Image (cartoon, rainbow, N blue to C red; front, side, top):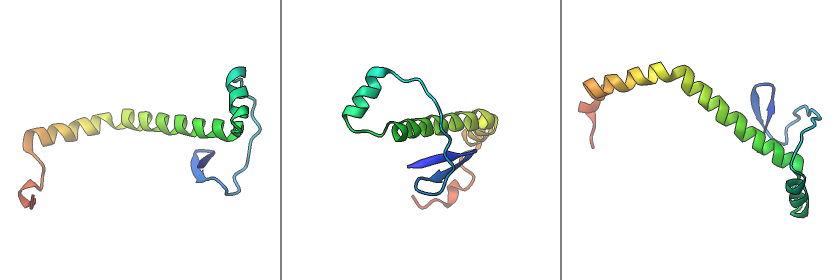
Length: 88
């Protein structure tokens, strides 16, 4: 598992500073998590990490969309630059 420290992802178990945070969660969901002996903080952190990673990916794709489209258009028009050297 990874934790988020600022904008850097770091492996869990390292000395990342922790920030106490209040969140509102479904009471039924929290009760079920506790009944299943899940650590709610760890589960919330894991979910937040996935959301952060997904959003970073969306933003990267958005910021680089023009370059990706341009590269794809070039390949569509001209083929792969080194295709003649392929052995397969």
